[in-house]
Amino acid sequence: MASAFVGIKYKIKYEKEIDWSKNYIICANHTSNLDITAIMKACPIDFSFIGKAELLENPVTGFFFKTIDIPVNRSSKVSSFRAFKRAGEYLQLGKSIAIFPEGGIADNYPPSLQAFKNGGFKLAFDLDIPVLPVIIENAWELYWDDAKLYGSKAGYVNIRVLEPLLPSQYNESAENLRDITFDLFKKHLDKQKP
Image (tube, rainbow, N blue to C red; front, side, top):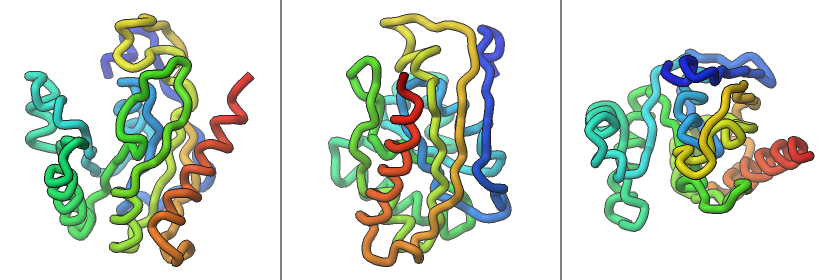
């Protein structure tokens, strides 16, 4: 990966052993363009990203997202519906999906965890697919957003993969699953603050 050439490496800790023969909705926080690589390093399975449609405009990422991943224009309900319908089809075929439930990288620096959107949790709940929480602790410290404002520096991106959350254990609603997942992320990330 290109990040290794600039001295960025990845440390991964798994809360429990993960059964990689299953498919998941991989759920990660988002503060850096390094987050995509972090998920790829932490999750050695076949999966597709749901990503912002603007990535289609870039000649490199555009090809990647047209052929592998699921673009979504978050300001369009029709686009969101189509993206999550396609994601549901992938999940039913046994493929995993990676989502950033915050909906993108927030503008505030240092970043804080933003409210989670419902889409991925509704898919998990409706299809009974486990949610795999992937907490990326500090990528923003090395490379916030696209690094244009604060630059980049060498170091380790720390990643914590938590135990999968089974929707059947949260049978009240997709919103309940979303809120429990958010609380896990917030609790863990709050512990990282000085």
